Image 1 (cartoon, rainbow, N blue to C red):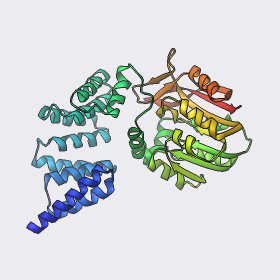
Image 2 (tube, rainbow, N blue to C red):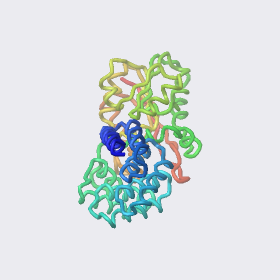
Image 3 (cartoon, rainbow, N blue to C red):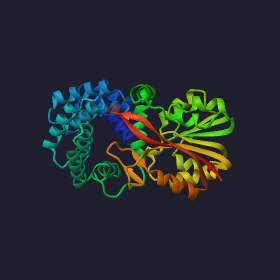
Amino acid sequence: MTGNFEQARDFFLKGVAHYRAGDFAQAEREFAAALDLVPGRVSTLTNLGAARLKLGRIEEAVALLDEALAQEPDNVEALRQRAAALAELGRHAAALAAIDRALALQPANGPAWTLRGSILRALGRLPEAADAYRSAARHGDDSELSRFFLASLAGGDTPPAAPREYVQSLFDGYAHEFDQHLVDVLHYRAPEILVRGLGAQPVGAALDLGCGTGLCGRLLRPLCRRLDGVDLSARMAQRSAATGWYDEVVQADAADYLHGTDRRYALVVAADVFIYVGALERVFAGAARVLARGGRLCCCVELAPPGADLVLQPSLRYAHSAGYIHKLAQQAGFEISATAEHPIREDQGLPIPGLFAWLIRT
């Protein structure tokens, strides 16, 4: 029995190391091996639940965390992970109850306050969510991510970009059901509008920025001799590559790719990606870099309210003004050939105003 415990401890410690390194699949295997050798251990159940939560196996995570809490009802980490899992399932009231119990036991837990803020934001209780993010900062969780969340609710200085970890995590988790949710539920039509505005003229090489699962790619492919895609999310990049519509898909930040690639393009398309980029100066300059004279950039943005060029909204999406797009076009050497206003998608049944723009490199 002693040998089993020591071997399980080794598996557990390896699992912790892999989890901290972001290799959640390997962490899950190590924790599962530890649990097989020493069943029912609360620390192993909690960490295995956390790993499966990261892997999107939410129901399994909840079951493991419930098992841990049956033995130790006041285990703060198990309560926090369970709250996160319930929030992923859309069970926000139950998630709030779990995180409130964790905070009652450990009021100075900064990550728990951050999670409470996100749960309250999902429930539409925005002033309380802002207070929770402030509490997170007071208790040491003054991360880029928590500051980003707070800025979306409390105004003040607008962060120039969304944290990469947030965007990657959001779309890695969204990749499996992205098409159905975006098109069928949110009535997303941006790719059709952008590509229709290009006309039927064939192009040489095209680049799909933020290619996602390939919703633009399937429309662009018949027009292009070559089609490349770039996406910050590894899982989105894998899905778009698997469609067969792209000659190459690269996992990278859009601006980094535009400033680093040796490829040149006749067309760059950015369908609903700028809402997660924020400030667009570097993207426009990069697009100008990869486009020859006469090359085209077409893009869409959520429209900012009057008087603001760039706004981070409570939805955690950026909105941009028409004036901002015109200013960037002039700075980067583009002429705007056409613009149009259409709803980009729906949010809770309401259309989200959008600006679509077609630009030519001068």
